Amino acid sequence: MSGPLVSIVVPAYNEQATIAQVLRRVAATPFRREIIVVDDGSADDTVRLVRSLDGEIDDLRLLPQDRNRGKGAAVRAGIAASTGDIVVIQDADLEYDPADLPRLIRPLLDGVADVVYGTRLRGGEPQRAHLFWHYVGNKFLSLLTGVLYNTTLSDMEVGYKAFRGDLIRSIELVSDDFAIEPEMTAKLLRRKVRIYEVPISYYGRTFDEGKKITWRDGFIAIATLIAAGRVLVGAHYLSDVTASLVISVIAAYVVVRLGRPILDRCVRLFERLTDPVVGPLHERRRRGAPARGAA
Image 1 (cartoon, helix red, strand yellow):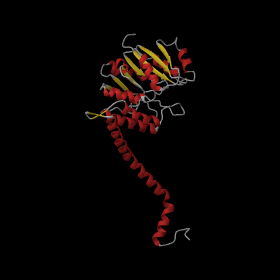
Image 2 (tube, one colour):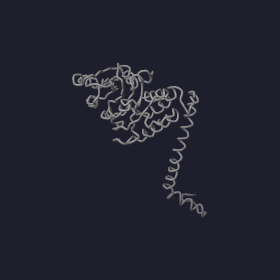
Image 3 (spheres, helix red, strand yellow):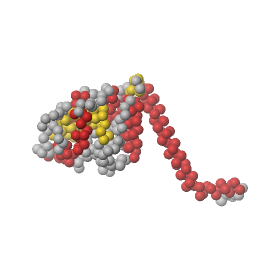
């Protein structure tokens, strides 16, 4: 098979339920590839299942970590071990469908992009209904990224990303956890690379089904967007201190804009619920009659 070599990095942690299916779907994609599974210290049968596919799937490599270090550490290890002209991050939990891989890398193959992000937030493909607060958090982090780095990315936190191999291997990444997503985004945007987005399918999981990212990671992502380097507002780079102030102002603005309507609705709901009790009391006081229960 001719064409550019595509390195598909699959970070995995306790994914015995889906890992074999993911790898078989990846192996069915129509391009020259190497598949690098980085097991992040799984305590289940993930490693055994990957090894059982060694004779079935060509160019399959397993990189076991000695302990659970986090998704970022697994992604970094996979990128460092890659040799492809294109590097793709493919999660092992089937939230992202490997059938979308050809669409994801098409702008890279056409030479118009340096990086391609899948997006779950622009529609066009099957989407499981998002967890509400995850959706709000993703929208806020993407908005913050846009303001700070002068971009229009709709889904900064998406785990389905493709890169020019030489580009992503040249970037020094340090995050061990889910902060790898904002770190990569910030450092790529600082290099002013050509980033494209393509709609992808999303088969999201609930926490009961194995989803691992939580609200705490949202706050870490905000800090990472700052710590990954100076940020760009308009045509001027800001120091980390100034960037922190900018983020605080933006966060306060968003809270006020979103919080006031919610607070107003809560007040109106409270008034409707208490009116049958409070209304007669106000009427008695207005007429001068003692309230019920008064001595």
